Amino acid sequence: MKARITVLPGDGIGPEVVAAALRVLQRVAEVYGHQFEFQEGLIGGIAIDQTGDPLPEETLALCRASDAILLGAVGGPRWDDPSAPIRPEQGLLRLRKELNLFANLRPVKLYRPLLDASPLKPDIVAGVDLLVVRELTGGIYFGPRGREGNRAYDTAVYTVEEIERVLHVAFRLSRQRRRKVTSVDKANVLTTSRLWRETAIAVGRMYPDVELEHLLVDACAMMLMLRPTHFDVVVTENMFGDILTDEAAVLAGSIGMLPSASLGEDGPGLYEPIHGSAPALAGRDVANPLATILSVAMLLRHSLGLETEAAAVEQAVAAVLEEGYRTQDIAQPGTRVVGTREMGEKVVQKIAAVGKSVHEGG
Ligand code: IPM
Ligand code: MG
Image (cartoon, rainbow, N blue to C red; front, side, top):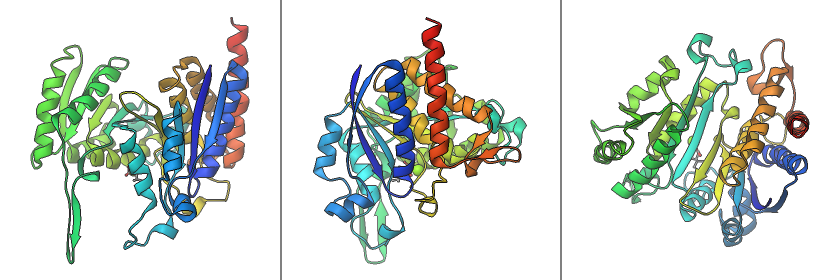
């Protein structure tokens, strides 16, 4: 197949992890006979430096005209002045909003060789395989805000329609999994959360084959550490989802392992690791590219409908971990520490092998 992919490396380790992931995409194209056309755009701090805008119109136009978008990370200390009127993160938030990418899928899966990489006890994290569906274009991230001298405010706003559509995504995805949805809110305090829960109950009635439970966000934060295998699909509002997925990353051994897909009703999906630009690691060839490589797998699956290819990438990652290769964030005694580039190449080599055996097997 032919596909147009917009590549937005961004800041910090973004360009390095994206380069590794692109090699993997190119390998997939070679092995499976696809034609992927790549076009690069500016976003975040580098876009501010070069154009004054964290999401230049040109980048937005490229994104709109593509089948999928692969993004690295945005932000860094250079643009961190709290009084600066323009910030790199605004570029990412605006891109999500402009493309109406309201459903953010964040799978949290523990790869077996990383059982001991988490600071949590192996018997707690063994078998972790959950999916957080984070609402991405509403809530306190986008509500009215302001600053008046010594007073500042942000506002969480949700409509029933915004809650319904992301809940439908969660319920539908749960049917491909273990048919259990945990809706997370703060309904004992927040009005938006009471609307969220009311809507979750109503939408849940349309999926009688799926079990629905409600959990307050503070209890959910604790439960994720105590009994993470309790969860199948977790669906929640924008900021709770942001916080809970960084927490959940501990289950997978490192935030460097967690990919994401941001999807709308139609149009291109946006794929990015959930980690940030990690300025301290930038330019040193030490960052873990696997979150971005696994995001490429999600891109193949959700935007291009290439399930076999997506699975091949995921199996390649698993195989490389089985063989003992580790970036420094997931290193353990007895494993072989490699850099960003080498880790990417190890995955690339496995895809050749996986792809070949698929062909040979007919
Ligand atoms: C994420 C990030 C972003 C967010 C930042 C960079 C704006 O933390 O994707 O989780 O808060 O959504
Ligand atoms: Mg975050």
